[in-house]
Figure 1 (tube, rainbow, N blue to C red):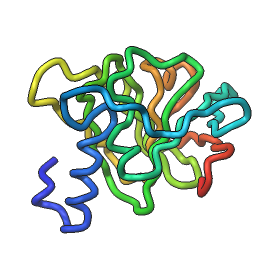
Figure 2: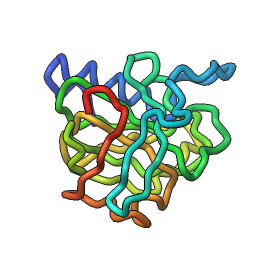
Figure 3: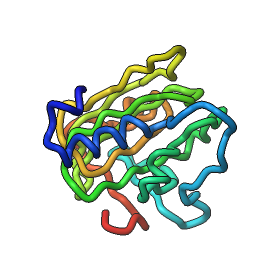
Length: 165
C-alpha cells in the first residue's frame, strides 16, 4: 500500500503499522516491551471456545516491536494490537521467525478479515500484507490457529481483560 495516496493522518498510521508485526529495523534484539499475559491476564476466546493468552501492544513502541526476534510463540499465546481509529493497516513480517495468522477485528470483536499463514520475511524488501477491511484491533496467532478455531470474517472474538475491547 502506498501511504502517499492516503489521508495524511492515515499515511502516518499505515507507516507505523508497516513498521510493526514482527519488525522495525535490523540490529541487536531489543527486549520485548508488550505486556505479557500471565495467569488470568488478557486473553481472547475464539469462536471454538479456545482461550488464547494475549500480550497487549497498545503504545507506538509496543506496536513497532511486535513479535520481532522471537524464535517462536507458545500455541496458547498471541499478541493483540490496539488502535484508536478505524483503518486498514498493513503489517509486515520483518525480523519475525515464524508464520502467523493476522485477525483484523472491530472493537466489539467482530472479525473483518483473516490473513492466514503469513510467512516470515526472508529477504529485503519485506512485503506488507494489507487487510481487505478497516479494523481497530489486530490479533496475531500462530499460523493455523484461525482455521482450527472457526476464526472467519463475521465471527466474533471475546476479549477478556483487554482494556477498551
